[in-house]
Length: 390
Image (cartoon, rainbow, N blue to C red):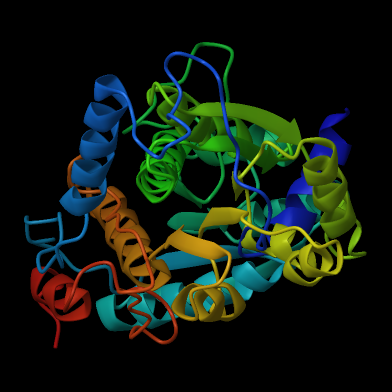
């Protein structure tokens, strides 16, 4: 697939939130390591279940402190922060979070629409470069795929760039190779996606009592799919009584509803699959209804970065059992804090930009931050204190 088509696919999918839902027959197995038919599990599988429970429990505590601890120690008054806003729903949401934080810290803030197709993205990034900003924040689109020339131009001018939700090498978390084009900082990047996938898998191992026969559904042309897939599939396979595989699901079929029929067809052809993860929540559009219509029961799924429809299903005890949420408000403040530190010459570290993690279940869903998970309680006041603004 060409880079242009890859970028278009990314734009289509990143407008969504996440995964699938519904029902189907539980799997049985004859392998010596598989769960026994009487419901008992091997000693090795019992150990794996206990480890998965501990993994989920480890992120269950409410975090009350942000990872950034050093005061900014300087003002960004008169400095220009520009947001490259893609024409996808998540783009506007992130923009609102960034604008709020930028206003608090004192940045001059502007939003430039960059569309969602490669030509528009390139043109938008050219426009941003012409504005001579002091820092730039981009959502979703990787520089190597759609704005390589502009990324090189910004780097040559020593203008820091921060990417949220895309995959790129950077100066803090994943060093670039000589032939790679990266950014100053990539938030919610590859390492975070792997961790999210592992948390999803841990919940599946626990919920299935070590009997999961799972599938990961994603589009490999989307930046973070290979990382989510690796985290989920590898972690499930660490359970001796479990199995996992990956199945490609073109994101272009989401809006038309084709994804739902493709998922149902896969499950009908592979009745042993009883759990799944999908790359984005909107891959689930129409899936619960389609599964019920097909008479499939006993099937459950997990997601990352879901929305209201998925959370309602979790709370109702439906086919979705969990979600690994993304704290968009927190990430907005973190991105602006990092931009400010780049601009005034302060250090940005890997510890400072760690992403809070948790698992939403039927017993715990917190969307108190304007419909999203806050990530850290009181993060606004804590950042404001470090910025010395009131």
